[in-house]
Length: 247
Ligand code: DGL
Picture 1 (cartoon, helix red, strand yellow):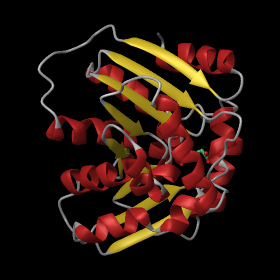
Picture 2: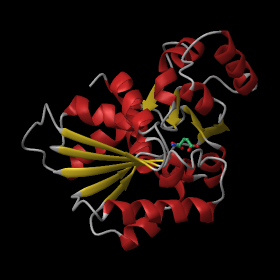
Picture 3: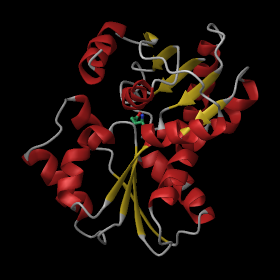
Picture 4: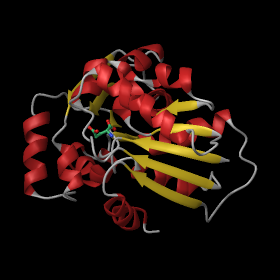
């Protein structure tokens, strides 16, 4: 199968990493809208428009499916993208809620959603989590993590200071949904902050778990062909991909 992976920028590489670890696809076309990132501070109509443009871009490739790695786009634009796409389109929000439900037994558990401003404002995760019976849901927009990750700041005092800034009034969560492509890169620091008893939910692993239920993957592809496209500076995307994916 040939998959298109869409993100607002480089963050979606965390989803590609999960796809590679599970060896699901023969060919991966990655498109990052690096010229217009971040999406998380933009409004609904702009996010939908960018999502639709990504579907048009992918029409050049005869894909079997599109994965919207970007949580912000998944929260706002999936229905519109599906209307114009010539293949199925899957987003990470529903998959993230299912993964939370699969790994957290008690519906009384405290779930903390982290995401961009737009994702948190959309309440897309809340809507999905409520369907699974969760009632104790907190959400926090933590957009500052995005530029930190882009700067490859994955630990240290400056990141710790933002944890204190964002989380000092937060009830200790049983699970944290990493509702932004960039956040898996600070998993280690977040796990240290919240402690080992807090389960972190990774969008990339969640979408893999979800797709494995929807499709029958009979074959593994240990060496898929990956093509990277970006709306600005594709070479920068490729060199980050080399580092983050160690390909
Ligand atoms: N890719 C976005 C997301 O997952 C984060 C970066 C942005 O704001 O565009 O929500």
